[in-house]
Amino acid sequence: MDEKINELLQLRQEALSGGGFKRNSKRHSQGRLSARERLDLLLDQGSFEEFDMLKTHRCQNFGMEKRQYPGDGVVTGYGTINGRLVFVFSQDATVLGGSLSETFAEKICKIMDMAERAGAPLIGLNDSGGARIQEGIESLAGYAEIFERNVRLSGVVPQLSGIFGPCAGGAVYSPALTDIIMMVRRNSYMFLTGPKVVKSVTHEDVTTEELGGADVHTGVSGVAHLAYDSDEETIQGLRRALSYLPQNNMESPPWEENADSAERETPTLAQVLPPSAQQPYDMHQIVIPCMDKQSWMELQPDYAPNMITGFARLGGAVVGVVANQPNHLAGVLDSDAAGKAARFVRMCDAFNIPLVTFVDVPGFMPGRQQEHQGIIRHGAKLLYAYAEATVPKITLILRKAYGGAYCVMSSKHLRGDVNYAWPSAEIAVMGAKGAVEILYAREAAAQDDPHAYLRHKEEEYQKRFANPFVAAERGYVDDVILPERTRFRLCRALGMLNDKRSERPARKHGNMPL
Ligand code: HXC
Image 1 (cartoon, rainbow, N blue to C red):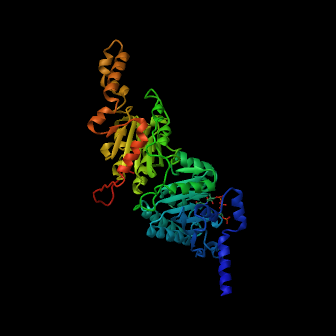
Image 2: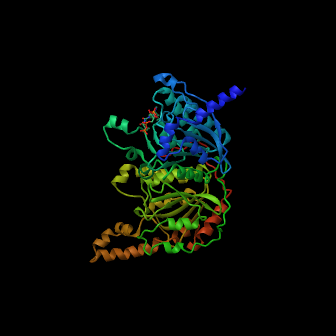
Image 3: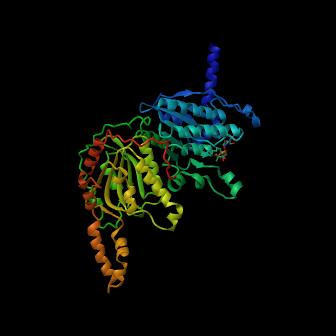
């Protein structure tokens, strides 16, 4: 027996050392943690239970039969985060670049299936050069098996991805199918193929950072949600994101005891709005004071910043916030902003997270560039997402709500549950200036002073339409509320909607304009 136990301990030791001391030291010197160190930080201390530690690959090509590593480059199992069960995998780039073999894929698929059965979140720590080149079709098949499970779990259990090293091919497509992606600045990359392959195919010289660094994916492509400066911070980010998500689609997100009273007045909010509706302001100064203190977690802050998306708590309950940002492009709705918000709305709806929408939007972005980019299609995504969402939907119009953008931003007509406006709201087909230039072009041309005439007409239009009262008369807004009572009214509305029920007609699925 002792001999057998020693054999086991020896194999375990081999598995624990991954690709060996030299490779691990090199990665430490680059400021990277090992696959196991990352799991230690992610999970509650002592909670990790590992599976398939001794599993090895079966490849016989290119001398691979001699390159065996127990565990085959990925650590898989389950553990807890703040006492909540999660399933995890952590790829080990010191073993054959963290590349994915058939058996590596089987290990991940096993815990994905367990996550589905247990109704618990899946967290993937990715650090992989993609499909193991020596294996070929088996590794491709392995990826496809993982993708199929990513889709199967989508909207059933939360799936979170951390990107910790250069990730290529399937190692980026699997995260792309998950709910939230976080990257490490300067140490992690996401691309279909690395710079060497790019050079050989397109003759383009590009660095890993330019091709798929954290700044590219959080600021330009919108693939990733957040970037941090170290492995440690990224892991804390993943833990925090999980605190806003339920175990699965049948549960509510975790409620958190909070000292911040729902009755707290918000007297500073009214002063945030500038005197003129043409002037910008920072929407964060409205959103954050309304939410429970320290509860705000923004997602994708650097991508399409004209739209704000993030998690927060109201009276202890998790909410998903969507808000126009007048500080950037006047808060206009363009293709990127619409796509960003649509995906966020769908994530919230999938995981029973009520939506609170703050509206100050001058409309959709006009022009050739946006039309050619497909603003019709992208704008329709947001319309679709809000109309489809059955979670509680609370909307507050602060200032502008013009045209189609009024309809889209969780209006009453899309089955908004509680729609409020501030007295400063302007709900109209379009801004007064643009409106009178169309309505009175002929009359203005006949005047001695067309500009003065149009200014006068603009004032008239402004008085007639640029207010919340016409909408309130129709019942399109449920009440015009005082800014200092905003937090209180939002908390109350949310409490009232706690047991909201809303059924959709049976269908296989809708045909969202993707
Ligand atoms: C096997 C791999 C590997 C891979 C890296 N390695 N990628 N082994 N299969 N896919 C190995 C290297 O041989 C090396 O082994 C070690 O990992 C470290 O690699 P380096 O190149 O030295 O590291 P680095 O300079 O940091 O570059 C990392 C990298 C680069 C950018 C990821 O290795 C790279 O471009 N790899 C290929 C990426 C790729 O095209 N993958 C296939 C994607 S297709 P030693 O023994 O020296 O330590 C795919 C199919 C799915 O994934 C499609 C889904 C739609």
